[in-house]
Image 1 (cartoon, rainbow, N blue to C red):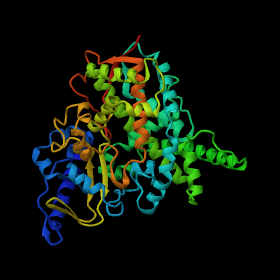
Image 2 (image 1 turned 180 degrees about the vertical axis):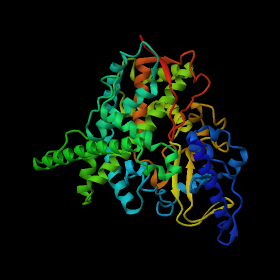
Image 3 (image 1 turned 120 degrees about the vertical axis):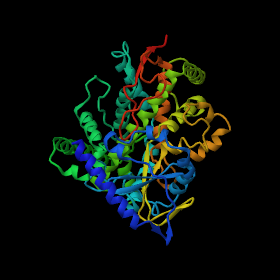
Image 4 (image 1 turned 30 degrees about the vertical axis):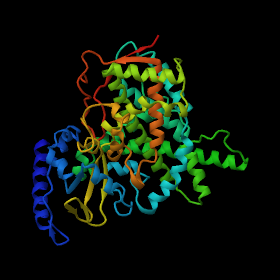
Amino acid sequence: MWMFLCFLIIIIYIVQKNYYRKHNKILGNEVPKIPFLSAAWSVITGPHVDVLEVIPNEYYQSGIYKARLGPHDYYTIISADFARKLLTESEDVVPKYEFNSELPVLKFYGTGIVFSNGEQWRTHRKLSNPAFNRALSPNIIGDVVLDAFRYLRKEIHEPVNIYELLQRITIEVLGQLAFGYSFGTLKSKELPDIVRKYKTILNHVESYPLYVFPFLNKLPTKKNRIFNASVKDFDKFIFEIIDLKRIELAKRRKLNEKKKSNNEELLISMLEASEQENINIGTKDLRDNMINFFSAGNDTTSMSVSSSIYYLARFPEMQKRAREEVIRMIGNEVKIPTAEQLKEMKYVNAIIKESLRRYPAPMTYRQLQKPTQFGEYVLPEKSIIRVSNYAVHHDPKYWDEPYKFDPERWLTNEKKNCQHSYIPFSLGPRNCVGQNFSVMEQRIIIVMFLLKYEWSLPENSIHKDDLVLSSSFLFRPKNLEINIKERI
């Protein structure tokens, strides 16, 4: 199998090299040589973040590099200046890259707000903005965290896999805030069947060889069969919820009832917004958006909170200072903080910003609709552009000691420079619609954990010197175990 993969890599390399010899002129000019970074390793290992930590200075000086993966060349932006130029362009000039519809990423995520373009994307965005504003509910998030504390009573006598716990928390929060459904992830150690299917789907979606060799997706393999069956089951689950919410909304209209509180589930809010805007949104579009929201909120938030808890374990003085700020603001009793209290916790917010800086969503994919200049380079129309959020967040032009976890940088004048190269939720017209929701959730989880627990790294932790990540498409810590004890 490995010999076959190596043979294919060599063939693809030769074909692409010959192709680009013939197509290396843009606008009548020779293209300046863009630094090339071999990406053959990622076919086997996955796009691990470590490669970015060894990029030579000349790569940052150029601000862009090229990597050849399968049938395509990808231009990867690592400069904060180039990233800002690209991301603030009109969404019609630099739309999202449209993956092959046969790839698992589109089979599962569909064409919701993350992967759609043009009028379809604008419709999704128009309906999503007010829906997310109405879904912000500190009390629902806080109640789930309290459930997590009860769940932890059975596990606290031994090191806790904090990332796995946070995945349970974020899934439960998203279920309740997105469509008023409790998955029950905090009731027992065994995950519900639908959540296990969801994780099976994600593992398949993130299988890197399937993107480099698309024909693998059509083979009648056991993994492909399990993936397709799991997507079908998850679709059935989502479609049933959508039908129930349509019935609920129809009953509410018939009785001329309004929800008593300002908070509303995402799904209901989108249905109401579609009626108010006279937009006929189909069940498939609703399904795609719910899955987009669900997956994005689960992975980004759980990774960011995991890294915050890790660094507070590694640096006890930071944990002590953060806890003192929380107690000063809301007292020593475990309770759900208000939105106003959360905004005033400057040090806790600095920790969250620094965690998002160190480990953002890895890549943003775009495709140029016209030749575009970045510094001395002119990239051709239809070029596939990847913005490495991770690399931008470690651009030495804007960050002092970029690989150091330093919340203080957000409490000084340096933060003015930081904002220029800080894109955890992207920026421009296609910035993340759920960023306020994610930040609020992170704040509540960390604040309540600081009130309830003290924690530290086990002596034999593999993360003693730095956070070790697993080889996966998204950033995930490898077996991040934390010693947790209740505060007296």
